[in-house]
Every structure is written in C-alpha cells, then in structure tokens.
Picture 1 (cartoon, rainbow, N blue to C red):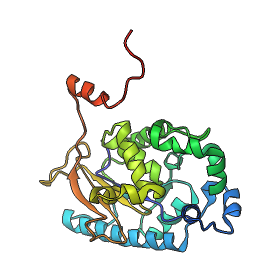
Picture 2 (picture 1 turned 60 degrees about the vertical axis):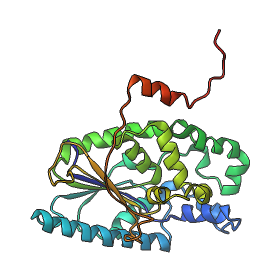
Picture 3 (picture 1 turned 90 degrees about the horizontal axis):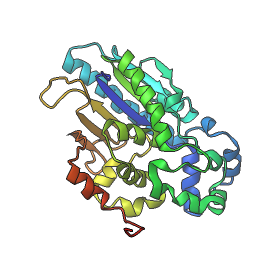
Amino acid sequence: MMPRTLTLVRHGESESNAAKRAAEKGKRHPRERDLMRVHTSQRRLTPRGIQQAHDAGTWLRQHFQNEAKRLGGVPYSQVCGYFSPYARAMETAGHLGLPIQWRPDARLSERNWGDLDQLTYEERIAKYGEIDNLRELHGMYWPAANGETLQALSTRMWQHFHMLREDRQGADVVDVSHGETILTQRFMLERWLPEDIVKMMLRTDSKLSKEMLKEPMDRQNKIINCRIIQYTRENEGGGWGTKYCRVRLIAPSAPDDPNKNLDWRPIERRQFTSQELLEYVDQFPHFLSAA
C-alpha cells in the first residue's frame, strides 16, 4: 500500500530555466555558455526560484499543521521527505523549511538529456532543432538525443513507488524533483495513456504556453516551478482506502487563484471496452492500404 499521502514538488526556477527563457525571447544571457559547461546536476536556483521554494514551504507547513490538528496527531511526526540529488532539487527542499529528515533518491533525478544537456539554446536549435521538435510528437518514447525516454524514466519511478509501498505505508511523503519526473509519476499514478502525457508536456513547454494555456484547465495543470501536486488515500467522506483516490494541484505563490489551482478531484483511471479501444485507435491514420 502506498503512503497515506504523496506530495510532489517541482524545484524552483533554476539558472537553466532562466537562461532558456531568456534565449527564447532573443535575450541570450552573457554567461549561458559558462552555465552549460556545468553538469545539469550542479546547476542552482535563481533568486526567484528561492522565493518560489519559500512560498511552497509556507503552504506546506500550514498544510501539515492543519492536518495534524484535524487528525489528532503530532505535526510532522509521519512526514518523510525524498529529493532528487540534483542541486536545484536539494536547494528547493532545503528552502521549504520543513522540520523533517530528507533522504536522497537518485531515481527521482531529471531524465538524462544526452547530447542536448550542455548545449546553449542556440546550439541546440542549430544542431538538433528538428529532433527536438519530435518531443511534442513522440512524447514518452522520445530519446532526447541519445538520452533517456520517459518510458525508461517510468522504470525508475516503479522502483521508487515500490520502496514507498514497502517502507512508508502510514507516512505522508514529500518528493522534490523535476517537471518531467513529476509528469511520469502522474502518468503512472493516474493511469494515463501516452497521448495524455504529451498534452501535459505541452502545457509545461514555455515556448508553446501562450497557445496552449488558453483554457483554465491548462493553466491549472501546468507544472510550473514549485508546483505542488498532492495525492491522498482519504476519500471525500473521510474514510481511508488502499490506493490514491483524489488529487489536487497548488500554485504556492497564488494558492487562492482559481485559474492556477485545482482543488481535490477524484482520480478517474481509464478503462475501455473492446469497442472503445477500437474507437480510440481510430485517431491514428493508416498509411498502407489493405492488400
């Protein structure tokens, strides 16, 4: 059985995030090349990212204190933290300010971006622009220029989840990791199909955000820096089940904004009849005529 609750937190804005966004706007940072020489695991948060982590920590501390009062327990006595051993995730976890013990878990690391990892934005577009665009077409099966697919990342997540089921059944767990790590966790916990993860991937892609984020649901689901996603085994009536039945998404910098947050909702894990399966695959074209 999985932990009582599972809280996923994306790291705050990193220097890589800031440099990429600047380059996309045509304002390349003068130290971008120096930043790219450093392995991604050692890249730090920006001042904005630190503030985002503080905001997330404020929300989480209030949440766990309120839950202890509601359930009659001792605050933080059952809270366990795990973090990706990348500097930006470690830094985010530290700035949350939770009075708990944190444990590293390399399975929460960002996906391996292969040949793309240490290129500037301009170099990436010049050398791999066409390949990079396949990310939005092939989704979880895209190998990131000799790197890791999200399909491979899901294997790591199964191992992480197995550890949680074995060791943390009665706990409230906080995972601090990365955007696509969290996408993969959602893919597995909510039983998405590959096309669902592509849609969510596009919502997080800054270069497409203006086009994709026209509907409130898009803004509520976008995995912004320090986005909090919580799963619970507690049903709406107050009883506790054996698997996660509800999920919610919080934007810590604006927790009362209905356009950026999504309150508790039931997890609808999809099932199909045989006919529904055939109808679903009809969205994909045939390329060869019948013999």
